[in-house]
Amino acid sequence: MGQAQKKLIALSFDDGPNTTTTVHMLNVLKKHGVKASFFVIGKNITEESAKVMKRAHDEGHDIENHSLTHSAMSQLTPDSIRKEVASTSSLVKRYVGKAPRFFRPPYINVDQKMYDNIKLGFICGEGCEDWVDSISVDERVKRITASARDGLIYLLHDFEGNEQTVAAVDRIIPILKKEGYHFVTVPELFKLKGVKPKRNVIYTDVMKPEHVIK
Image (cartoon, rainbow, N blue to C red; front, side):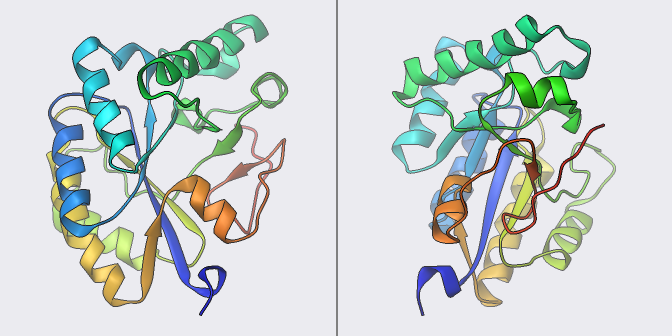
């Protein structure tokens, strides 16, 4: 079976990097031999957290852009929008040697002005409200495994203290592997499915881009 015919999914994590939860997530991914994508916030990149981001890159993970300040960017001017993205891309390139190719809008808040001023591919994702502390590990596992489908991108969070998602991912990976899924990074998902990211749309499923304004 060729790679494109396999059941492929991509795990992605927002709001790092940090020296605690991001590290724990990397340890879980390493344990299971899985690569993922990390959408980082520029203001969270410090000398110490940059070492964690570099570790992620060196271990084969993908580092992407989640803005500089995690603002609702549709409310910003075109110049501020460009700076939010360019500043974070510059930091990522400085520390890992490779600039991001994809962007996840904070709060999935998107307008046409953002599509026009951000030249990266827009990524959303299937989530489980894992930023809500009251959503248990069991519930996170249940929601994520129930929504699995070929070509899907998952949107989870590795912000500091979100250890319930670390525990959930540790359980999710073997369940989905047993169901025949292969884990890849977001760029790999596009490449292996033979999809060239389009402008003016946002992706949760690489086969079904949507023009979202909200």
